[in-house]
Image 1 (cartoon, rainbow, N blue to C red):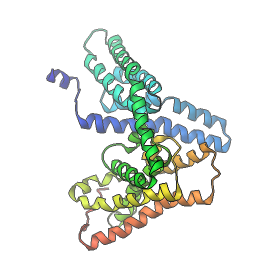
Image 2: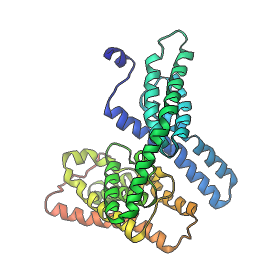
Image 3: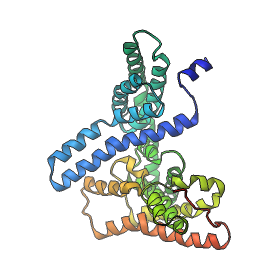
Image 4: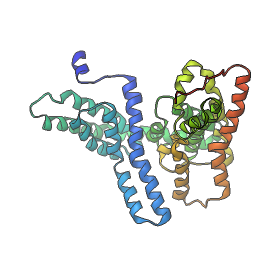
Length: 345
């Protein structure tokens, strides 16, 4: 059996399911729900109905896009990959608010079943899509509502706790989601799976920004402008090899997130009520900031200078200043040495 699964490229591992598939799912979300939200928002703001329609179609493809992305990460054969579109659409719809998590789990199972039967019969063109779709949608009908409700409940509990204890939860959510962003997993997918919005979503944005802007500013000496943009609007995940060598370099961004999180929840009360996936994006392509803005519009908030000042301070200014100062201090006491933050760009 082990040899058969290996031949079929069915590799049961944390990396493949917890990192590769999860990260791919986030990309599927970006290419559908997230970009669709941005396009439709632009259309609404500028009165261009065509853009609103385009954005709505993109958002409607969310489930299929996520499932196909997961199948791509699992290196599925073409017939399995294409069949996952149906699985993703059904699962996302049945999963409700927790649809992304349901899609992740069920698409993985359906994909692996499809890979097992792929090219094993003379009527592969019928058997492979039949097994992939039948297994996936059958499981979705049974488990997707349960998975969706569980994920939604966890997300609701986090958001409720943040409303109840904004200071403490502001720290916890900001630090945890920020760490997830820098780790080789997808903080965006986690936030989407838990439907993390509201004050908790705002804290998540703050934590991600602290990591990205923090590392970008702190490592400017070594990486100059290329590193500033690569980390500041790209990803702080680039620093993971350096973190493995010297974990102390991670402390300034983590400390910054512990500061900006409660500033977000208690002082500015900044909420993320755009697409939940944006909560885990930080300054990557400015998606976090666009998400906050679309949330303001969706809530019908009268946007004032205070809103913009809060967003800019939390996203860019505070994490940059805090990590710059901590970086200087850590270099003086020898916790950060020459080239500890150097990227291979």
